[in-house]
Image (cartoon, rainbow, N blue to C red; front, side):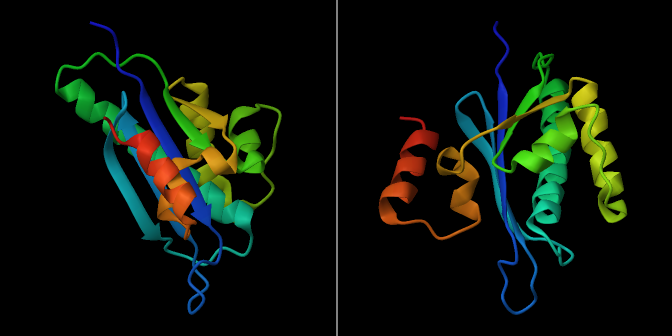
Length: 158
């Protein structure tokens, strides 16, 4: 039997909550073409830059990738290929995927090392996706009708 790929789409909306200043993380996890988990959650701390909000969202998606892989393995499903994580923030992706990059923000250092370690171990593969193609936008921002229905048509199995 062929191995089913695991895909995660992740995004954040910096400063989404106008009252508290907290960002929101949106994520959708699919095994094959079937969405198995999705969330839209306010982040636990205020981020002063969109890079920080995107990086925290990326860390959350790596944690979800590890959990999903563990669940599948515990059910006897063969999982060897990296989980593909799609994000739309180039700077956070660059920091996680290029060994020569250095993170100079100490408050994000643990998230950085966690993501880099899992990327270099082959557990995840982080890739850039255009913002208009990121399904996680469904969980982070209000979309116009045609964008919303376009994303819904793509992620639902017919």
